[in-house]
Length: 339
Ligand SMILES: CC(C)(COP(=O)(O)OP(=O)(O)OC[C@H]1O[C@@H](n2cnc3c(N)ncnc32)[C@H](O)[C@@H]1OP(=O)(O)O)[C@@H](O)C(=O)NCCC(=O)NCCS
Image 1 (cartoon, rainbow, N blue to C red):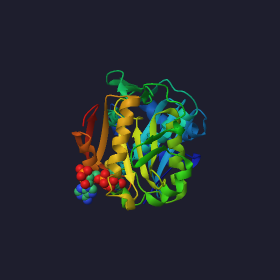
Image 2: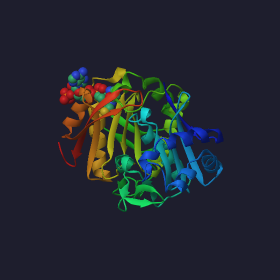
Image 3: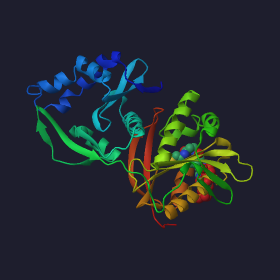
Image 4: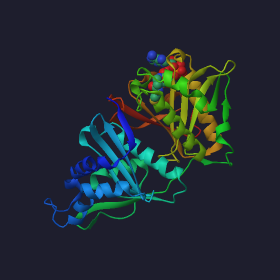
């Protein structure tokens, strides 16, 4: 079943309060909740209903069929006030997607100097993965325990001012990387299938409106220079081959490479050519420490691409994809100037 992401409505208040309540033991200092009355009141159904109707708050919920799988809320666009994913829906990328959507919506309304969060101890690794840094020790106040954290939104750093990123074109002998645009929505929708996403974090779009939403978020990220999304075309006849990108939203000093090709284009070394062309362009045009290439252990063609660029494995972990497949991820780091 697919997870749907949408703004919260006032009648979600009860489910949101119940979901957050499940995490009370992680938050409060005393197991019986004594001393944390103010916190418990602040997550009651009536309090949640009040925030949802308050324009100073922005809520997005993740719904899995009739279940509320997760919720995120920002206060004043910059304080991460809630982020909770139900235990049975964790490790499926829902928190990451909620954060990406909330972050993009907040930044779309104007510049933000810093995002803040008071993290529970159990959520620290999640925020660290988003790029948040601890700004203080474990703190106990009003009967709850947390670690204050902050994240300075950063973009990919260009060596020279980038100009209009929507006009970016990078060419190699056989392929052209063209900045993503709405014109490719249908080809992306038709080709981003279950077969293609088998070893990928995202799930195929079940409706073209999901692909439209992906393209519009990608264009916002492109305009800000956070993430660069390209369509891979064949030089000469401009045939659509797939999509690749350089994603800096998490760590601009360690941008992530990503790629997929339509099934009919596999096995022609287009993947290798597109990624090595993007790497060469990035080395000439961006400031970064190294590139990151996450890939499933079983995805041999993709691993060969990372290895051909001199990638070495720096981390291994198991995560759930948005399609519900367990991914056995190996993370390659590709140092500047290697291979
Ligand atoms: C991963 C992907 C982009 C590779 O693109 P591609 O153009 O088909 O791959 P290439 O032709 O460039 O081949 C890359 C390497 O894999 C090898 N390879 C290809 N298919 C293989 C297979 N079935 N078994 C073993 N090796 C294989 C090639 O020989 C080549 O290695 P070499 O250059 O060292 O000889 C493509 O398979 C794809 O879109 N897959 C679905 C989406 C996906 O998984 N994306 C990556 C997420 S990390």
